[in-house]
Each structure stands twice: as C-alpha cells, then as structure tokens.
Length: 248
Ligand code: ADP
Ligand code: MG
Image (cartoon, rainbow, N blue to C red):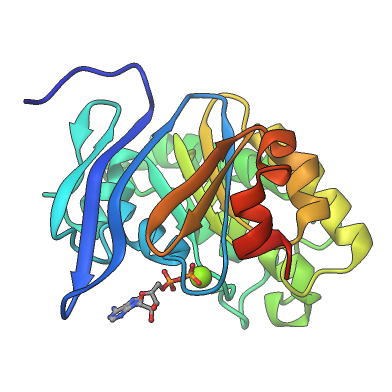
C-alpha cells in the first residue's frame, strides 16, 4: 500500500542485492525539508550505494524511494535530476579547461529556446545567477580562473555550485571535505548550513569534527542496515556505534 508522506524523501524497505550480497538491506530513511542529514558508517556499509539508488544510478531490487510523494525507483537518472535531485560524487567532476564562470554557466538548467530580447533578458538572468552562486561558494574573485588551477577544496565547492545553480530540492554529497584543509572544512560547514535552508541535504562523511558542525540528525549504516539514528550526541554514545565504528 502506498501512503502519503510529508517528508521530502521517504525511503522504505529498500534493498539492493549484487549477486545475492545485500549492499543495502531493508533500509527505511526519512528526510525532512530544511534538514541536513549525515550518514556515517564503516567502509563498505552501503553509504554510497544508498545515494546511487536514490539518484537512479543503481536500480533497487525491492523497496520504494519517494521524493515529494513521487516514486523514483521507476525513473531514469535524467528524470530524477529533472525532478529536483542533485548528487555530488566523491571526486569532483568539473571542466578543468573552462573558467569557473563557464562551469557555472553551462550548469544553468536548460529551458525552451528563446530569441530576441528574451534571449538578452535570459543572458542577464544567467549572469546574475552565476555571480550569486560564485559568492555562495567563496569563488566570487575567481570567476575568470581556469577551473583546473583551483585548489582541490575549491574544485569541490565549484561542483557544489554547479549543483546549486540547478536549485535542487534534495542535494546529496558524498564525502565533500575529503582532502580539504581545516579552513576549507570550516567554510564548507558554513556553506552546507546555509544551503540546507529551503531544501533537504544528505551528506556522507567520516570527519566527526565536521559532522558535529553540520548534522541535524545522524544515521549510522552498517552492513546495509541502520545501526543507530538520532542526534550526534545520542549516536556518539551508542555502544553499538562505538563498537563497529567510532571505536576504531
Ligand atoms: P560505503 O560507501 O559505505 O563505503 P558502498 O556503498 O560503496 O560502501 O559499498 C557497499 C558494498 O556493496 C561493498 O561491499 C561494495 O563492494 C558493494 N558494491 C557496491 N556497488 C556494487 C556493485 N555495483 N556491484 C557489486 N558490489 C557492489
Ligand atoms: Mg562510499
């Protein structure tokens, strides 16, 4: 039976098995609007696979993924992006030979063709949006720089910007601060706290100091199942979590 939900994202009984091995096993996950959820867990727990399932890169064996009450498991990756789901992979995929400005510009969502003064208006609109996003991601002074020359952290921010310009209602980030300096991590925490307003954000992360700075709620995954869920405090003091994850 399908039920209506107020959650932006409602994952129910989600399972994927690869040759009989259940990488995700009967998962239930509910994420609210304005919520920033962090998913933690040991390597191989199934964290990345959960994001693969939500964005349609991997097809579920059984279960349901509802985004604003629309079933995603039957949609293609492309349709899921258009529905308003943005996903950032672990390694940044930006166009190294293009400028920061051009990277953001080409990520602006395509609409119906427009001509004449409408086209002019649209150009101005895109220009304004590109500058707004560049400011959000701390790259307002690097618009003309070739993206390949950015620091690793700045490349991560640029890719977040390329997703933000599409204004997704659900944004998923896989280990966004890996390889970042302490200062960049602090700035990224500030950025994520800002962008969670008005949307839902799911972040996979290992850096517990960073998790503390951003998480509303934490979900701990282990062997494809939820081991614990709740506030950072609750999860950190959970003996099961300490045993399989934090203790190491
Ligand atoms: P995490 O991100 O938590 O480290 P993953 O989701 O990447 O874990 O992987 C969970 C498990 O599923 C691992 O054992 C991994 O080898 C396996 N797995 C992931 N994707 C596939 C796939 N496409 N085919 C087979 N096994 C996979
Ligand atoms: Mg992973």
